[in-house]
Image (cartoon, rainbow, N blue to C red; front, side, top):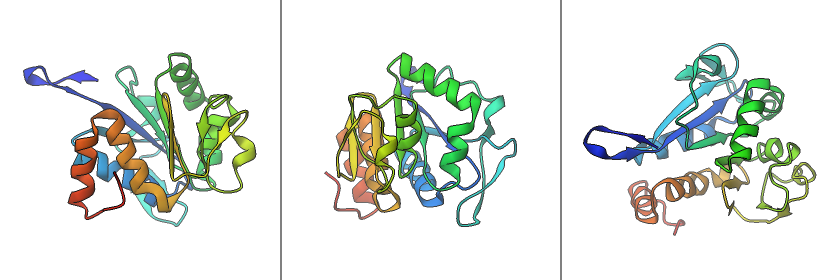
Length: 194
């Protein structure tokens, strides 16, 4: 959280884009968190601000990984998609950042195939988690649940594109409150949440 004028605080969130990311998963999170007035930045790990999604949609990120200061981050978000998830797994700077967040018990979230990044690194051991079907073996030593969204302590995981709204609303609930998440759900005519 960081201080705004007047003493109010605002959560700071970073979502990471790699070539081959799932567009709907990433952009739903960005859209809904911005509707909730949460400061979320799209960070490219490709070395270019333009990142091509898994369905050939090009998105312009807000900033490059190597030029970003993550000291004020409250939450890191990993969208799924292939080969985007594999690129997230391989990025050394992101690996170091995730390990730092894990060691400090800070908030991390991943959807679709991306929980495999957290699982492979051992961050889900002993935690309840979910992922896209077929990636369960990568959630090392976790308790796998067949739910749209699973929150366990500082980690939120979700299953895929069809659960992106629930995932985003869960992030809003975590960073703000249930009332704000409900207000955003109502505003987009989404009646399945809360």
